[in-house]
Length: 243
Image 1 (cartoon, rainbow, N blue to C red):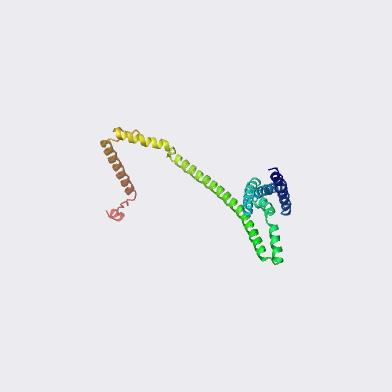
Image 2: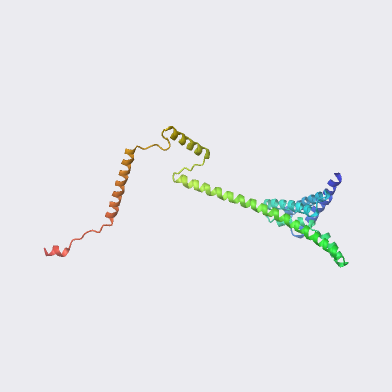
């Protein structure tokens, strides 16, 4: 356990952190972003060394390390208001299988084609796992923030609709429990034969009177509208002059 801790500290944290800082300087990453990029690379190196020491497959260890690098890169990019590649690009370079690529070229140069193809497949699989780890984290992060924005927009639309309804004097039913309780009370009052206080029963004679008043009001409005467009009658001036 102590050997694993020392190995993670020296090879993982310090080794990957310093390598990331060097590539960050090469990529013109400055000041605070450079330290955060070094911390991102150190975290990825620690995860890779720890999982490799625990006999995890090489591709899976690189995948988990890339996910850690991608997660920290997304967090630091939003905190510092910069691009994600400022932190992920220098941090991924120490995990790139450069040694495997060199061995592949040596095997091909010496005529060991089968061994060279094996190294090529190993190099491509590790590189693919690194890219997949970054891609998974980036996709999940974008989906999370997209869903958050959509929920916020939906909430704002609902608030605007409620304000419009309140301006028109309409009060929407927002409490589902109260609405359900009111419906239950209505059903109970109907079963008991009583009247519903929310919807009082109107007598038939009063209902007929209201209907007749509404009809009369409607007819008066129609007569008024037609009288406005009625063509006035003009008397013949010639006949009056003759008389």
